[in-house]
Length: 252
Ligand code: PEP
Image (cartoon, rainbow, N blue to C red; front, side):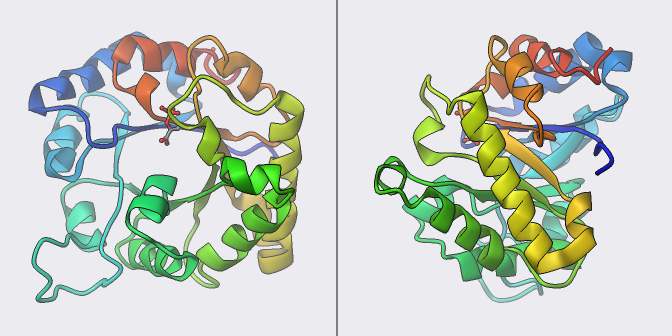
Protein backbone atom coordinates (compact mmCIF):
# COMPACT_ATOMS: atom_id res chain seq x y z
CA UNK A 1 0.00 0.00 0.00
CA UNK A 2 1.37 3.44 -0.98
CA UNK A 3 2.12 5.85 1.88
CA UNK A 4 -0.68 8.33 2.44
CA UNK A 5 -0.15 12.05 2.95
CA UNK A 6 0.07 12.42 6.73
CA UNK A 7 -2.52 14.50 8.58
CA UNK A 8 -1.80 16.05 11.97
CA UNK A 9 -4.96 17.55 13.40
CA UNK A 10 -5.49 19.65 16.51
CA UNK A 11 -8.78 19.45 18.38
CA UNK A 12 -9.18 22.54 20.55
CA UNK A 13 -12.39 21.15 22.10
CA UNK A 14 -14.18 23.87 24.17
CA UNK A 15 -11.03 25.87 24.85
CA UNK A 16 -9.70 29.18 23.59
CA UNK A 17 -10.85 32.67 22.72
CA UNK A 18 -10.42 34.87 19.69
CA UNK A 19 -7.00 36.02 20.99
CA UNK A 20 -5.76 32.41 20.89
CA UNK A 21 -6.15 32.34 17.10
CA UNK A 22 -2.71 34.01 17.05
CA UNK A 23 -1.41 30.47 17.75
CA UNK A 24 -2.30 29.56 14.14
CA UNK A 25 0.09 32.09 12.68
CA UNK A 26 2.65 31.15 15.36
CA UNK A 27 2.31 27.52 14.33
CA UNK A 28 2.92 28.19 10.65
CA UNK A 29 5.89 30.43 11.49
CA UNK A 30 7.40 27.51 13.44
CA UNK A 31 6.76 24.71 10.93
CA UNK A 32 6.42 26.54 7.60
CA UNK A 33 8.20 24.84 4.72
CA UNK A 34 9.00 21.76 6.84
CA UNK A 35 5.31 20.89 6.96
CA UNK A 36 4.57 21.11 3.24
CA UNK A 37 4.51 17.30 2.86
CA UNK A 38 1.84 17.01 5.55
CA UNK A 39 -1.70 18.26 6.10
CA UNK A 40 -1.80 20.40 9.25
CA UNK A 41 -5.23 21.10 10.68
CA UNK A 42 -6.69 23.02 13.60
CA UNK A 43 -10.29 22.54 14.70
CA UNK A 44 -11.30 25.44 16.95
CA UNK A 45 -14.71 25.81 18.63
CA UNK A 46 -17.49 26.59 16.10
CA UNK A 47 -17.78 30.35 16.88
CA UNK A 48 -14.14 30.80 15.86
CA UNK A 49 -14.06 28.77 12.63
CA UNK A 50 -14.47 31.80 10.34
CA UNK A 51 -11.90 33.93 12.21
CA UNK A 52 -9.53 30.94 12.31
CA UNK A 53 -9.84 30.51 8.53
CA UNK A 54 -9.02 34.20 8.18
CA UNK A 55 -6.04 33.87 10.56
CA UNK A 56 -4.75 30.86 8.60
CA UNK A 57 -4.65 32.75 5.28
CA UNK A 58 -0.94 33.54 5.31
CA UNK A 59 0.11 29.86 5.57
CA UNK A 60 -1.11 26.37 4.86
CA UNK A 61 -2.70 25.43 8.17
CA UNK A 62 -6.17 24.14 7.37
CA UNK A 63 -9.20 24.74 9.55
CA UNK A 64 -11.83 22.25 10.60
CA UNK A 65 -14.77 22.01 12.97
CA UNK A 66 -15.57 19.59 15.79
CA UNK A 67 -19.18 18.56 15.21
CA UNK A 68 -22.28 19.39 13.18
CA UNK A 69 -25.99 18.75 13.12
CA UNK A 70 -26.87 15.52 11.31
CA UNK A 71 -29.49 17.43 9.30
CA UNK A 72 -27.70 18.67 6.21
CA UNK A 73 -30.34 21.15 5.04
CA UNK A 74 -31.10 24.52 6.62
CA UNK A 75 -33.96 23.91 9.04
CA UNK A 76 -35.85 25.22 12.06
CA UNK A 77 -33.37 23.78 14.59
CA UNK A 78 -32.52 26.43 17.17
CA UNK A 79 -28.94 26.27 18.36
CA UNK A 80 -27.80 23.74 15.75
CA UNK A 81 -25.12 24.36 13.13
CA UNK A 82 -25.01 22.41 9.89
CA UNK A 83 -21.98 21.26 7.91
CA UNK A 84 -22.72 23.63 5.03
CA UNK A 85 -22.44 26.60 7.43
CA UNK A 86 -19.10 25.32 8.73
CA UNK A 87 -17.85 24.87 5.16
CA UNK A 88 -19.07 28.38 4.32
CA UNK A 89 -17.15 29.69 7.35
CA UNK A 90 -13.92 28.17 5.98
CA UNK A 91 -13.76 24.63 7.43
CA UNK A 92 -12.25 21.87 5.27
CA UNK A 93 -12.55 18.95 7.71
CA UNK A 94 -15.11 17.98 10.34
CA UNK A 95 -14.51 15.79 13.40
CA UNK A 96 -17.49 13.49 14.04
CA UNK A 97 -18.11 10.85 16.70
CA UNK A 98 -15.47 12.06 19.16
CA UNK A 99 -15.78 9.96 22.32
CA UNK A 100 -16.84 13.07 24.27
CA UNK A 101 -19.82 13.41 21.91
CA UNK A 102 -20.55 9.69 22.06
CA UNK A 103 -20.47 9.62 25.88
CA UNK A 104 -21.71 13.10 26.92
CA UNK A 105 -24.33 13.46 24.18
CA UNK A 106 -25.26 9.80 23.67
CA UNK A 107 -24.27 9.80 20.00
CA UNK A 108 -24.76 6.41 18.34
CA UNK A 109 -22.82 4.96 15.40
CA UNK A 110 -25.87 5.67 13.20
CA UNK A 111 -25.93 9.36 14.18
CA UNK A 112 -22.17 9.64 13.64
CA UNK A 113 -22.61 8.12 10.16
CA UNK A 114 -25.34 10.64 9.32
CA UNK A 115 -23.07 13.48 10.45
CA UNK A 116 -20.29 12.11 8.23
CA UNK A 117 -22.78 12.02 5.33
CA UNK A 118 -23.75 15.62 6.08
CA UNK A 119 -20.04 16.51 5.98
CA UNK A 120 -19.70 14.92 2.52
CA UNK A 121 -22.78 16.78 1.30
CA UNK A 122 -21.10 20.04 2.33
CA UNK A 123 -17.78 19.12 0.69
CA UNK A 124 -16.01 18.54 4.02
CA UNK A 125 -13.73 15.62 4.90
CA UNK A 126 -15.06 13.88 8.01
CA UNK A 127 -12.63 12.64 10.65
CA UNK A 128 -14.59 9.77 12.18
CA UNK A 129 -13.45 8.91 15.72
CA UNK A 130 -13.55 5.40 17.13
CA UNK A 131 -12.09 3.82 20.24
CA UNK A 132 -12.76 1.54 23.18
CA UNK A 133 -13.26 2.47 26.84
CA UNK A 134 -11.09 1.02 29.59
CA UNK A 135 -13.95 -1.27 30.68
CA UNK A 136 -14.42 -2.57 27.12
CA UNK A 137 -10.70 -3.18 26.82
CA UNK A 138 -10.58 -4.99 30.17
CA UNK A 139 -13.50 -7.16 29.05
CA UNK A 140 -11.55 -8.24 25.94
CA UNK A 141 -13.97 -6.36 23.64
CA UNK A 142 -11.55 -3.97 21.96
CA UNK A 143 -11.66 -5.62 18.53
CA UNK A 144 -15.43 -6.08 18.62
CA UNK A 145 -16.12 -2.45 19.64
CA UNK A 146 -13.64 -0.78 17.30
CA UNK A 147 -14.58 -2.86 14.25
CA UNK A 148 -18.29 -2.27 14.91
CA UNK A 149 -17.74 1.48 15.21
CA UNK A 150 -15.74 1.50 11.98
CA UNK A 151 -18.38 -0.54 10.11
CA UNK A 152 -21.38 1.39 11.42
CA UNK A 153 -20.08 4.96 11.67
CA UNK A 154 -18.73 5.17 8.11
CA UNK A 155 -21.00 6.07 5.17
CA UNK A 156 -21.24 3.52 2.35
CA UNK A 157 -21.08 6.25 -0.27
CA UNK A 158 -19.36 9.60 -0.47
CA UNK A 159 -16.03 11.29 -0.56
CA UNK A 160 -12.83 10.57 1.29
CA UNK A 161 -12.88 10.28 5.06
CA UNK A 162 -10.33 9.87 7.83
CA UNK A 163 -10.53 7.52 10.81
CA UNK A 164 -9.08 8.57 14.18
CA UNK A 165 -8.38 5.70 16.56
CA UNK A 166 -8.69 7.25 20.01
CA UNK A 167 -8.75 4.81 22.91
CA UNK A 168 -11.10 6.62 25.30
CA UNK A 169 -8.93 5.81 28.32
CA UNK A 170 -5.90 7.44 26.68
CA UNK A 171 -7.62 10.79 26.03
CA UNK A 172 -6.77 13.64 28.37
CA UNK A 173 -4.42 11.55 30.51
CA UNK A 174 -0.77 10.62 30.36
CA UNK A 175 -0.80 7.02 29.14
CA UNK A 176 -1.03 5.64 25.64
CA UNK A 177 -1.27 2.06 24.39
CA UNK A 178 2.06 0.43 23.59
CA UNK A 179 3.35 0.97 20.07
CA UNK A 180 2.61 -2.70 19.31
CA UNK A 181 -0.99 -2.24 20.46
CA UNK A 182 -1.42 0.87 18.30
CA UNK A 183 -0.07 -1.06 15.29
CA UNK A 184 -2.45 -3.94 16.00
CA UNK A 185 -5.57 -1.76 16.24
CA UNK A 186 -4.65 0.26 13.15
CA UNK A 187 -4.24 -3.01 11.21
CA UNK A 188 -7.64 -4.14 12.47
CA UNK A 189 -9.21 -0.85 11.32
CA UNK A 190 -7.57 -1.16 7.89
CA UNK A 191 -8.85 -4.74 7.58
CA UNK A 192 -12.38 -3.70 8.61
CA UNK A 193 -12.33 -0.86 6.08
CA UNK A 194 -11.15 -3.27 3.35
CA UNK A 195 -14.08 -5.56 4.15
CA UNK A 196 -16.48 -2.62 3.69
CA UNK A 197 -14.85 -0.60 0.93
CA UNK A 198 -12.41 -2.89 -0.92
CA UNK A 199 -9.42 -1.15 -2.49
CA UNK A 200 -10.85 2.30 -1.60
CA UNK A 201 -9.93 1.52 2.00
CA UNK A 202 -6.28 2.03 1.08
CA UNK A 203 -6.98 5.73 0.52
CA UNK A 204 -8.27 6.25 4.07
CA UNK A 205 -5.87 7.84 6.53
CA UNK A 206 -5.94 6.33 10.02
CA UNK A 207 -4.79 8.69 12.76
CA UNK A 208 -3.85 7.85 16.31
CA UNK A 209 -5.23 10.10 19.08
CA UNK A 210 -4.92 10.07 22.87
CA UNK A 211 -2.20 11.84 24.89
CA UNK A 212 0.07 12.56 21.92
CA UNK A 213 2.71 15.09 23.03
CA UNK A 214 6.06 16.40 21.81
CA UNK A 215 7.88 13.59 23.67
CA UNK A 216 5.99 10.56 22.34
CA UNK A 217 4.99 11.85 18.87
CA UNK A 218 8.11 10.60 17.05
CA UNK A 219 7.68 7.08 18.40
CA UNK A 220 3.97 7.03 17.50
CA UNK A 221 4.58 8.35 13.96
CA UNK A 222 7.10 5.54 13.40
CA UNK A 223 4.42 2.88 14.00
CA UNK A 224 3.35 1.09 10.81
CA UNK A 225 -0.18 2.03 9.74
CA UNK A 226 -0.24 5.37 11.60
CA UNK A 227 -1.00 8.12 9.06
CA UNK A 228 -0.87 11.01 11.51
CA UNK A 229 -2.43 12.13 14.77
CA UNK A 230 -5.44 13.79 16.34
CA UNK A 231 -4.13 15.92 19.20
CA UNK A 232 -6.12 17.56 21.99
CA UNK A 233 -4.33 19.48 24.77
CA UNK A 234 -0.96 19.65 23.04
CA UNK A 235 -2.50 21.41 20.02
CA UNK A 236 -3.54 24.52 21.97
CA UNK A 237 -0.10 26.10 22.04
CA UNK A 238 1.84 26.61 18.82
CA UNK A 239 5.16 25.59 20.41
CA UNK A 240 3.88 22.16 21.51
CA UNK A 241 1.89 21.47 18.36
CA UNK A 242 4.81 22.52 16.16
CA UNK A 243 7.11 20.16 18.07
CA UNK A 244 4.66 17.31 17.36
CA UNK A 245 4.45 18.16 13.66
CA UNK A 246 8.23 18.45 13.36
CA UNK A 247 8.58 15.01 14.97
CA UNK A 248 6.96 13.47 11.87
CA UNK A 249 9.47 11.94 9.44
CA UNK A 250 7.73 13.76 6.54
CA UNK A 251 8.54 17.13 8.15
CA UNK A 252 12.06 17.63 6.94
C1 PEP B 1 -8.78 14.25 21.82
O1 PEP B 1 -9.63 14.50 22.65
O2 PEP B 1 -9.08 14.17 20.63
C2 PEP B 1 -7.41 14.02 22.29
C3 PEP B 1 -6.64 13.29 21.55
O3 PEP B 1 -7.06 14.61 23.49
P1 PEP B 1 -5.61 14.58 24.19
O4 PEP B 1 -4.57 14.72 23.12
O5 PEP B 1 -5.62 15.74 25.13
O6 PEP B 1 -5.49 13.26 24.90
